[in-house]
Amino acid sequence: MSPFDNISASEILPQREPFVFVDRLVHYDERETVTAFTVPAEHLLVADGYLTAPGILENMAQSSAARIGYLCKFILHVPVRVGYIGAIRKFRVYRLPAVGETLTTTILFREDVFGISLVDAVVRVGEDLIAEASLKTTLGEKEAE
Image (cartoon, rainbow, N blue to C red):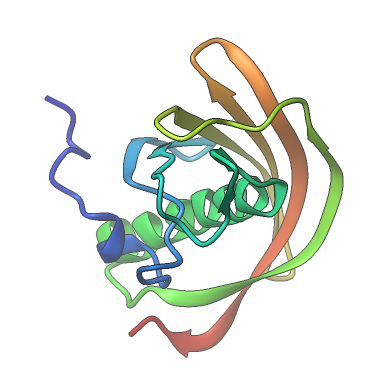
């Protein structure tokens, strides 16, 4: 049993249904965070049986938010805050995931510069690399509701 099994995504993410793209936190350490998301049939960003590219990007962003949310709530013991994407670089989608497939998204923390986090995101289905990008994110002042 993982120490993350009893943590609900709603505890560490500011997003709420129907706009949630992370089911659970799989791993967290100072450098790497891993999340899982099974693509549901009925979702805002599913079209023709596949999660769209914007859905994959939102999964990356929410996986990065899960990293910060876990850090805030369980390590720093401060409220989870709403974050924002500042920049997206090298966003590549190699294939769209089908309904029922589980995305495993790895966020590799590179650095924090003046409150802006630089991370690399890699999304896989099983062993297949389906997407990757580099993101710059920042936290706002607003706490998650």
